[in-house]
Amino acid sequence: MTKVVQLKRSHLEQMHRLGKMPSEQPISEAQFEDFTMDGWAYALIDDGIVLGAGGIWPVWDGVGEAWAIITEDLKKRPLLLHKTVSAYLEKLRVENNLHRVQCIVLCGFIKAESWAHALGFIHEGIMHEYGPTRLSYHRFARIYDG
Image 1: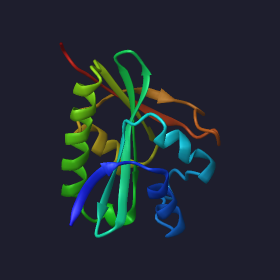
Image 2: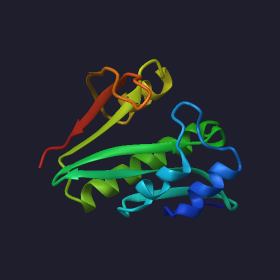
Image 3: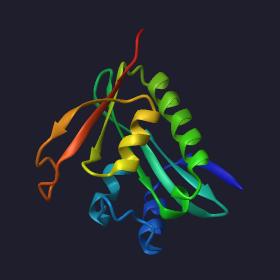
């Protein structure tokens, strides 16, 4: 049975232990607390196995940064992925009164760029040498009226 629950460090630890962390943007164990500290994050679980996690980091009042950790298992279930993320982005946006939600996508990660567009995000530009390893990222944002 598939369910969505509040993200806990143990969910990220399970993904790491089972080798389920995505290779496109590796996350170290030292970063796990950053993903769980604000409470605006969820895990998607199927039969006790974490398929992915995602949420929004508050940037400042009205603005949030969307993020997702998607396992290979979840990539094989694109409809479940899209519907769940769409619903929870909206839930978090409304609950936290956000007028802007933004995200970054690694340049050249075409599937993620297409998915950002499918979620309603608009491309704003390229952030050159933005990542810790000096990789470049696309900035996407979704602006909400009222």
